[in-house]
Length: 476
Image (cartoon, rainbow, N blue to C red; front, side):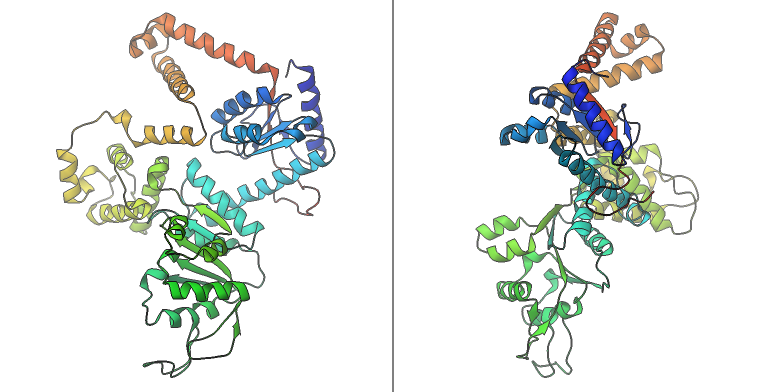
């Protein structure tokens, strides 16, 4: 498997220890789609190249880099470079604590992946793009392994409320009460204190009876403050006191009441910039942003447009059959801009269903009249330059791929597909308008690159049955 004796010894040590701790180890990355690629290298100088190659082949999956015991002394710059190259964790190895640390890490990652594949996630939070999966992992990890406040950031319509609901659903507290939602954009200055903290009878005109506010109702559950950046300054001070003391006063009452809840906030603003501008309290910002999770815009997850569109169309059709979407309409949906993100795509899907007649596939003719007119008037662009191509480039950039790597991957894919479709190198060369020698050299170059990787090792590590130190056993 490896020509470097030092790496061979290290690889054997890693494999033995992980198998002893209950993990399944395969020498061929990609054997287990739910596993985790593990790059094993002897020297940091080789690690960067190996990490980038492994990341390019395993996009969207978590990657761990394992080095020898002397990696304990790795400096910040080298470790940061490995993280930029696509590693999710960099671990120095030994058969004792190093093995236990790796097994515990894989245990946590496995539990997170198990939740991501649970129907309660798959049926509501549709999408397999790397950007969306990264966000879901952050939310699941915050829900399962932390009780800190969570700040959800992202543009309007990106699904922040769905992520808040997922946080509440996965919260392991027992017993657990309700999720209480407050839209801070709808709070009036006159009644905002009552909405958040409740009031006593007679506290103001129209207060005919006492009532709990959102803070009181959230006791034992989750308080979700949507668009917290819109919260008035006077309420920011009162909310800070609640978070510090876990106590509040109703409007018109001098007695303190207790409330223990998990706080989840969402905003489409840059709260750090709001703090700098003096519009949001710095101390409150640090309280609400214990864990920050970002919901990506739809333009950064364009490979999710088709499954999202199909999901929304099927949802809007209820029990109607025949919800297939034509290829032409799918191409249009992928290439279209969505300033309102997923919410706008959902509204468009609803419009398609309202205009659709019969049981045939949904077509361009089902688009709203104004949108269809804009499509007809727009210049025609090559279909291959649609949003799907851009989404793949974005995914590569998110994994820190170089321009040279992106171009080479695209050329290699084009050559491989052209040969498969044409049946020969000569026909593929004519199709791609290059010489046969160009294709032969590129294919030979690809084989050389593969051979040069033999100095180090990449293995696939499936989840350990149970990581030491936590007493948990993973579900089958």
